Image (cartoon, rainbow, N blue to C red; front, side, top):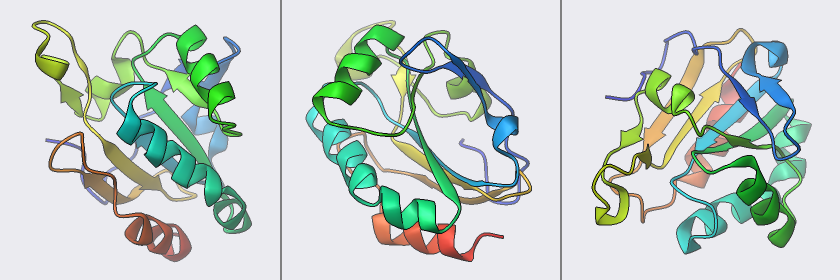
Length: 157
């Protein structure tokens, strides 16, 4: 079961698309939209991250940073970000560290025995590092409730 509202967000350090480490705790004082998605170059994931890109200015104006997280390799995430003109970090969780810490593992992804990715899950983390919003969609083919995410970012301290 994914982490709940009120929980301290587990710290994670993942590589961005340029192979540079990004540590969640280094963003303390900023709100964070942490968007776990199953796989780069899939239709619903593309729609989700492009929607966050389209709202990036709005989110940034609310002191929020968007971080996408997938189990794909940094090279794939870099190509995905470039192909979709994404201007926020797409982080590689190839070791499943963050996916396991946030308890959002999706086992046997796409019917492939032994392949673990993440469910589609969005967390809003407030400036103190506490989860103030959490949504795990019913299945990976369902996008998050963007209006609820934006409202949670606005309401977060």
